[in-house]
Length: 350
Ligand code: MRU
Image 1 (tube, helix red, strand yellow):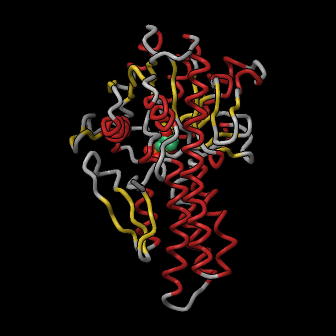
Image 2: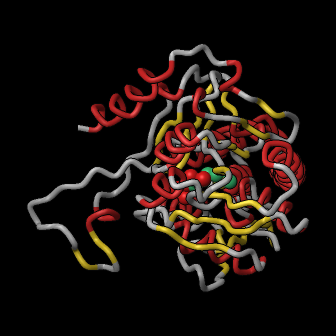
Image 3: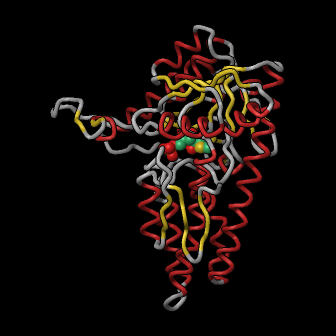
């Protein structure tokens, strides 16, 4: 099943806000694409890349219905690239299709489709590599893995990253349990990852995010596996808020902390995680639960959607072409960086 595809002049996507109910929506305009990205109808770094590329194809197709204007299409492309700031794949994919804009709508669609197919292949390959890596770390025995947010097929085009690794291990009967952080405030863990694992028949248990580090410390978890939204040149990993505490707990417990992501998520132009723009979302996502306000009306909320895990806490980054083990290569700047990165980002928010 494809989560995103080009169908008869529009983009057809699974509406991730409707899950666990499976509903598809059709996007016809650039404004609808931008809205779908900002409301997380489509979310997850690789899926954002695919929609970004097809969104430019949509802009070109709509422009060609009037009098094809490459400058207007380029302006639309920049709007799409800026719809969410943190995932590298979105602006990366838009940049990759931009050169085709001067050649007309068919060329833009071809370029976008190449990226969509490449995502499917990359995720399938890195899933196999990641499974082999975890087997090499943990041995051929059923594993308990902790994951966070959703890095499954629904976050990509057809195959997941972190959940792709889980899927490959499950095919070899090597998953004992997947511990799924519910992922407050928008619950991508319970609403999306748990749904995917149920579809696949993988044993899993949803936990509140705060339980994760303690479960790791208790020895219940063999390894943590997550996806990423952006990986800086020094291999600091930006992922869904709540990833960093899991990495700290994994380092303290001496278990592997593995990140699975396609090469498109690697951003060699951003030197460290500190330089990454973290998206701050609507405070109501924190303050309201099921439409009901949980905190007093006097209370404000701070809602960073992502955090930064310093490279020295990362055991391995698995892409479709290589395994990087940053903690082996990193200089031991250690504890100070682990403490200062999140506090610097928080300070910037006030
Ligand atoms: O805000 P979201 O749901 O788009 O955040 C997504 C994540 O943090 C994922 O872990 C990441 O994009 C990897 S998806 C393969």
